[in-house]
Image 1 (cartoon, rainbow, N blue to C red):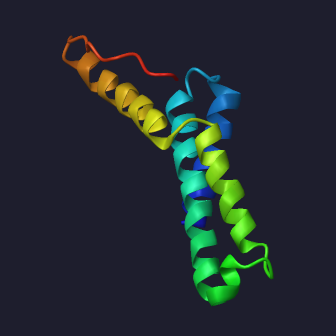
Image 2 (cartoon, rainbow, N blue to C red):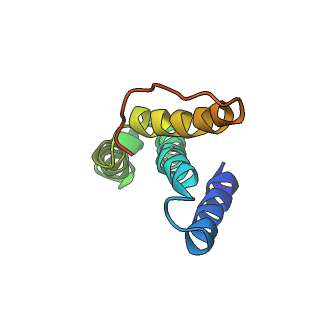
Image 3 (cartoon, rainbow, N blue to C red):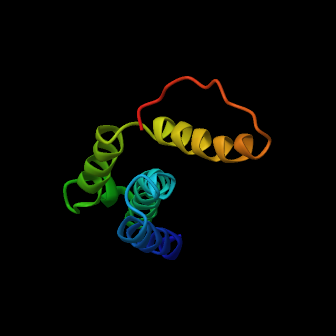
Length: 108
């Protein structure tokens, strides 16, 4: 899970450097979903490992969970990024068949 996020970040950074941000918009949207979800899962596992201490002020894990969850909302809900990814991917295949997609506008 961590390696997949790390490799996707490296791929997105490479594409941003070589083809620009517009060319890497799919990878950027993917990493905006994958990295925070991965961090949230790891923090959840840490809370589980600490037991009751994981939700107390004895450890910083509960505070990390709250901060990470806030960041997931602040950058735009995952659904917005997932819709952007779907729109990009579907437009690739529609253009192969000479079709145009009439999709709702999403923030991307």
